[in-house]
Image (cartoon, rainbow, N blue to C red):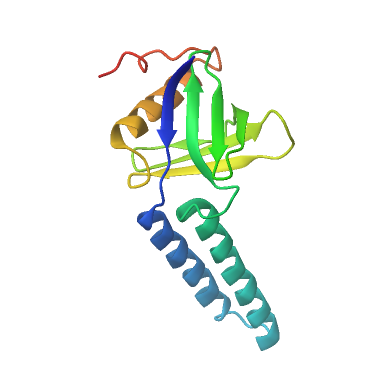
Length: 155
């Protein structure tokens, strides 16, 4: 049974943050003594990285971008991509939870590798965001016992 679904929308704040950080990294690169051709190649790699992360995490245009998270009453977490793929995941201990930024590390059970869902204040409903953060904090406190105390009955 589905307890909570969190829809993720494009984020202006995340896009601005990604642009600022990538620009800062490229700017710092040009301050270190390297050959011009090397700096240009690394700057190109930074630009490609920016386009990739903007499409996947900020604007959600990529087919593999995570556009929804679901938590069921058994404590399982699922993600859904823009292309419609749905996968059950294990929540990684490296996940970060705060009121303004939550980064979920997810390991799909159906395949190798990890995924990351970045949630900020402007890409999720505030009530859903709060409920998910509470669930994540309880989940960590219970060391993976399952269940959703304090989440399903909240107003």
